Amino acid sequence: MSKDIYQKAMNHIAFSEDLDQKILRYVKNTENKKARRRKKWMASAVAAAACLVCLLAGILFFTGKDGAEIVQPGGGQGENQLPVITFSFAAEGAGGGEDFGFLVIKKGDSLKQGNPTLNNVDEIKQLPVFKQEKGKICAAIEDGVALKDIKKQMEFSQEKKESETFYSFDGKSGETYWNYFEGKEASLAEELLNYEFKRIEGVDRTSEEGNDSSLLNYYRIPGEKVGDYPIITGKEAEEKLRQGKFFAFGGEETVAKTAEILSVEITYMKDEYQTYIQPVYKFVITDKSWEKGLKTVMKENGCRNPGEFTSVSEVYVPALPDQYLKITEPELHMN
Image 1 (cartoon, rainbow, N blue to C red):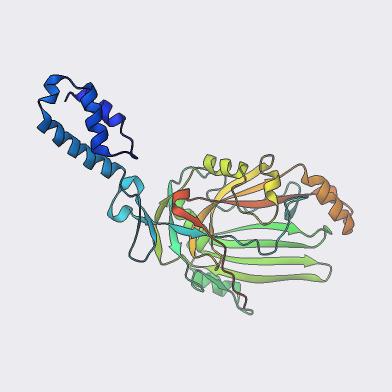
Image 2 (tube, one colour; image 1 turned 60 degrees about the vertical axis):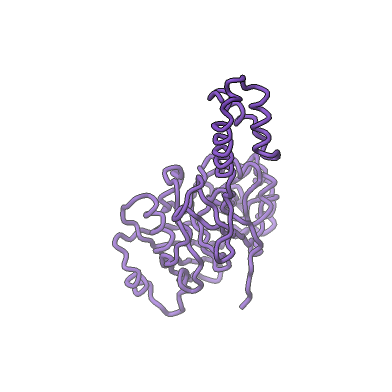
């Protein structure tokens, strides 16, 4: 059988048909008499082709010992086997999205600027996914504990701080959330992990009743890594945003196609209801259609200068490719 005829036969294989019969029928109709006298050689080629196709059409998804679905990137073996992981998201009762975003900021104010991937998301090609360890990754800071003591415990080698302020609809009360985090220079992926998991969170509140400050949480780098997963590009994440394939706290899908993207960064979902601690793209968006709705609700709440404010929302797109994800409802437990 000539190489040309064999290649054409392979190109005409339909996986839904009997493989040997398909190749034999094609060869019979196209091969010359000389090729038919070499049946033994052809039969070997057919057998080899059958093995090859079986390998190419081999199982990419199979079940591991613990029942978890496994994906082999590129058909690899061993350490390339990565389990399919679950992803869930809880809005936790927050609103926004239809008439205005769920966060109110002053025009010209910047949001947190410390994330090393801020508007710089395409350098990282893969990131680790961790198993949730409740109470170990995120720990609430008890009342009376001093900030200096927490900092000492964190052992920052190069401390950095960031903050952002959000306002209530009266335009007077506000909350400034701040973080201290490890800022030492490293690879971008390592800097991201330090930013996400070696940090202290707190909030300063201002209101007509007075001011107060609270320490909230501190984080540790997770200990149980599931594996290093490839991530989609920033462009692919934006395409999903425009298609409404994202998670948010309100009805932001109504502005998915028209929203202005103010920033994009890679962050980790760290809430304790998450089974896996995994990377996501966080987009901060706004929309012109929100201006009227925000101005109306702020006037109703006694704000005299609503034009000084704008509303934004944060929306999240999973960073892992679809074949590694299983979207599930979050399992929330009330204390």
